[in-house]
Length: 277
Image 1 (cartoon, rainbow, N blue to C red):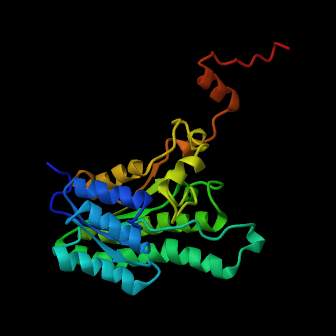
Image 2 (cartoon, one colour):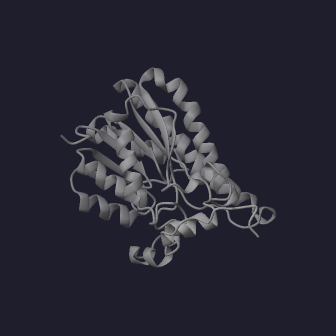
């Protein structure tokens, strides 16, 4: 039986990357999906390609009325909302700390934190009426450990992780589960800086991704979609308040250089002997 049969989901940032992979997987598993995204042409084309179980809504997650409209579309078209995947994001403010303009700082937090807040805010009343649901937020390993992303982006993702945990506590009583997925290096238009350009360019930009974590390959959008499927399904009915890292082991730590070399060449490790010159 399909894992999400009869369920309805809203996915922000659903037109490409992680959002697109999740929309396709959710529909394959029996769900009906609202694809909410700023990319109008791509979002509409994706909904058309998926078929009657998907619809597209133009949505800029900083705008409360547009986030509410995405939720209202799910309820108006299919009568319910079982999963809210607050996934929309971007890299945000870049550069040395002392050079970051305040307006770029504000925009980064508006998209990455306010956007998640608005998704939770408008999904919650619907899920309360229905007796429960699953809210999934996209965090990042940059919010778990420093040095894995730009400064402001990292701070915003840390805020998303903590807001997830804080929201899970009062919403648990209503059987609304709130969890966060923290991706590592995932090959998406956002990480490859190819948004609005052909997806074929992504492969040219991610050649070094395989070396960023113990599992020697680039992360793929479907790696995150599979975790979202678990969190949206009834299999995770006792899971809430969690920041689940999906990164091929990247946040575990940095492998000792000699150890990493030994694994790659399948040779024995040199053992340190203080008595040997």
